[in-house]
Amino acid sequence: MKKLVMTGMLALSLLGPVAYAAESESTPSVNSINRDYAAGKQAVDKKDWATAVASFRKVVVAQPNNADGYNMLGYSLRWMGKMDEAFAAYDRALQIDPKHKGALEYSGIAYLKANDPAKANAQLAKLETIAGKNSEEYRDLAKAISEYNASKQ
Image (cartoon, rainbow, N blue to C red; front, side, top):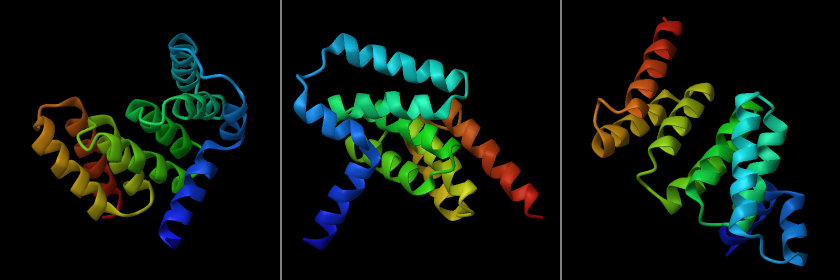
């Protein structure tokens, strides 16, 4: 029970004030969700991480089973240095879709940033099984792991 309460509290912290606003408003339309996702992607392109996080939080509040939204939320949070929240978002994306290549790649890179190469390698192994060594996600994470290992020698 305690774990369930903590998980719920973490989910609310990920969603922030948007979660409370969503309860009182009508259900967002697919068009507004798509606009929020597109706005988040534009913010990512501009490296405007706070705007990206706000946009992707709106997406996941409106669509709690949107693995892409959680993946991009985690990506944006990672760039802000909010690693616990990033890992929670990646974990949620992977709960929704255990074969989400983007979440596996990005969480692997986050594990490297957190100095946990064993977990990064575990994500790489999952990517190899799911997508093969020729997938972009596998190659990108393998390169990041190689660079991480070289920097530690």
